[in-house]
Amino acid sequence: MRTREAAQVPASLESAYRECIAIARSHYENFSVASRLMPDDMLPHVAAIYTYCRGVDDLGDEAEGNRLALLDEWAAQLEQCYTGSPTEPRFLALQHTISAFDIDRQPFLDLIEANRMDQLNTRYETYEDVLYYCRHSANPVGRLYLTLIGLNDPERRELSDATCTALQLANFWQDVKRDHAMGRIYLPQEDMRRFGYTEEELARGEYTPAFRNLMAFQVDRTRRLFDNGLPLVDTLEDIFKLHVKLFTLGGVRVLDAIERQHYDVLSRRPTVTKARKTWLLTKTWLRMKLSRQI
Image (tube, rainbow, N blue to C red; front, side, top):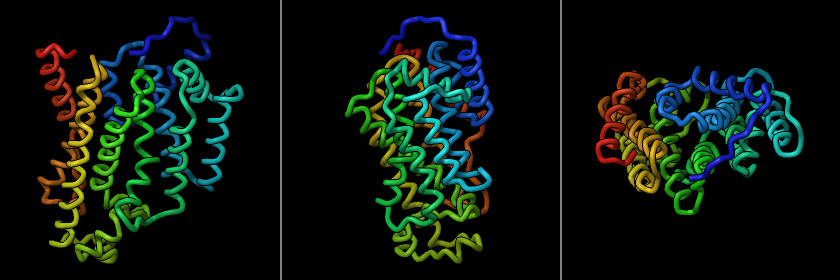
């Protein structure tokens, strides 16, 4: 594992990190659950990365005005982390984390590019096209995490990419209805034609045998991706092993929830409740503790 020298940081930087932690904890339960067991020295850096990722996604999904221009401004602020002196708190914290871990620009730029794609592309013709999107939207997050823990080697990156792509796809299948309401369809067009399900039917929210078969096909190959990435867990140690296993299991549980609804994600969004996530964390932690893996 990578170790960092203890150092005093300015009060403004401490405040910036506190803001990042607060932002991260105010968003998704996943971060809150995982952060409970995060080492104190790692939490600010993970929060800085998370807050950057969350911020760029919010620009791509929710910002008012010219989103492409706003994403360009975000990219300019990122560049200040490498060549200048950012003043915005999120980027002040990010610059310190980038410096502490010698993080390359590319994963951050890829995340911006994914959100540019969302402004320009609302349909994806092939599964490979969707995977290309995931290589920009999801895989950089895993690579950034591996960099933070000092284990960003090619073998682990490949396993992480499989896991992160699977997590992104699980989210797509969970949110077919939501995404369509935003004008986006991540289901490959070639698969919709193969199974005989039309955009018109999707617009009407029609759950048909064709839709069920289409979704079952997507869920099955997403499970295979999770299986492909699972060996990553055994290459990690301590709490980082728990985090990756927890997120992997959480993604699989989303697929389980879709399956329990007979793949009907149009009538009701399948979810994994906070209570179930907490139970999953506790069960996984106890099993690993008893086997002395953490």
